[in-house]
Image (cartoon, rainbow, N blue to C red):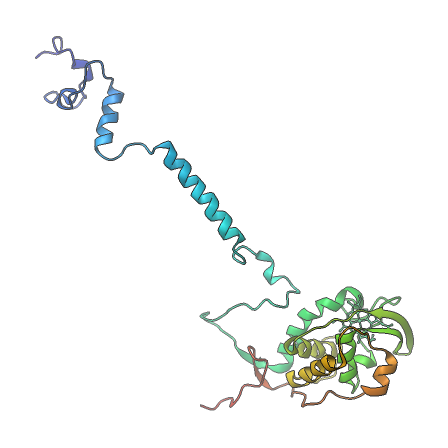
Length: 261
Ligand code: HEC
């Protein structure tokens, strides 16, 4: 067959003169190279993806993405915000996992986070604003031997006249409770050692005693300077903690049997 005589000559693939692909594949006359190529692809399982499959995949992605997005914390980037108190990163498995250390430094660090509740009024440095909000730095209510009064103020709020470092204030502070013992003990430790320099650690045991007293008294009524002076000018019951105590960062309690086996 010479190319002049062969009606399918124009359909022949270029490479092999001997094999006429158009004929081998029983292509009808008039087929273009494109349709021939299409057929070959179909047979090889490389057929183009149908439109409906495309749409289905798109819908699946949309629905899946929405579920994951709404599913909680995966994309909640604000968790490590400076004042977040419930941010409790799971460090297990990390190569340099630190699970214990000195009580004072840890309590001050944790307490500084809870102090975010107070900073808006009393100032980030605890010096108040000189007009409406009294100072916590150099306040005898914070630094004195009366941690029970301090806890009462925090948990119940306080209203009416109160004298701080020789100046009398007469405002109202809303209750800052309820707080857990693991929030209150570090907060009080921060007030006494981050904003002041007392040198002691309010223990979980003492914070719990304060919370028990608060619950017995009944939440909802702000305390007053008079009530504090009448009944709460004393240390909270329970042992305070030595600042150098090695504590467990999970329980906030002394590591039992440190160094033992
Ligand atoms: C909404 C503002 C506000 C917030 C928030 C607030 N306080 Fe107060 N606080 C006050 C005011 C006002 C007074 C004075 C109340 C009075 O005159 O009876 C006060 C008084 C005090 C006092 C006794 C007086 C002194 O200066 O020593 C302490 C202690 C105290 N606050 C601690 C805290 C702590 C700790 C927090 C956070 C857990 C906190 N406050 C949050 C407004 C606030």
